[in-house]
Length: 368
Image (tube, rainbow, N blue to C red):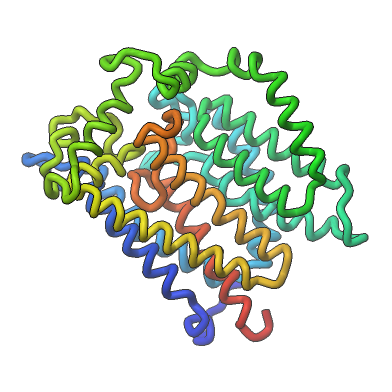
């Protein structure tokens, strides 16, 4: 199952790996800045992030060098265990910031919903590969996949974790669309969404409703709008070149909430300005274009489906996080991939990127 040949390194995508490494180092720099205190320069969060990045690259190579087809088959069955973990989290999960999203492993707290983002593409790819007998899918073939996606999204929403639920649902819909679900499904879904919108609104938690209302311009600057207003101040005050490393006042004087996690991009903007944010966006864009180019060169339909699903949650997280901190979308608590503090989402991102690289290697490797 696990073997390494020199040809693996010959076909290894060093470009995407290098971009991943650079963004990860950039993330470490700003987790350090977001948690820096003169009396304790190296915070526990920074030290954990270093552990997360180092162990993350180990996970990257493990997922890269395991045969992606065997890993996909394994992931299909693992996904049922993920659903069990999501159920367990609802019952015995660790409560933090009013949500029950984590399982406490003593050393760190693990978020099972991150595994859903990682293994759902494997579930979909393997499911459709084994269901393809006639070569054409009928709508009834999509029902089990839709039910699993709906159940997973509902379990994550109940934690509550609206951000991760949106990412999983969005990536899942993209995969099912790529698998060839009839167009009428989207028309019917849109109509159902419109009809059920009032019920959906009532089912949201109070703080989730407030986030939507804040996005629409309601709320007080000192209460409901505090997070987004402080984020905009941080980004705007950075100007062209920024205030300088460790010199961001919104961050230094703790005006900016969740600076090491959801609002890490605001810290970067305040300290490195337009030049720094542009450089970071170019790095992300280069990584995503490289990965999408790789997908277009994969001839196996199910390998392409798997790779696309692994890319989708990273791209969606990046777009939503950046739009969120600049006020173009409601705040839904989504970290910036490879940069925000947090072990679970770091590991998920590295595993996904390593898995994609492994699929890319299989395009050329003899015997694959």
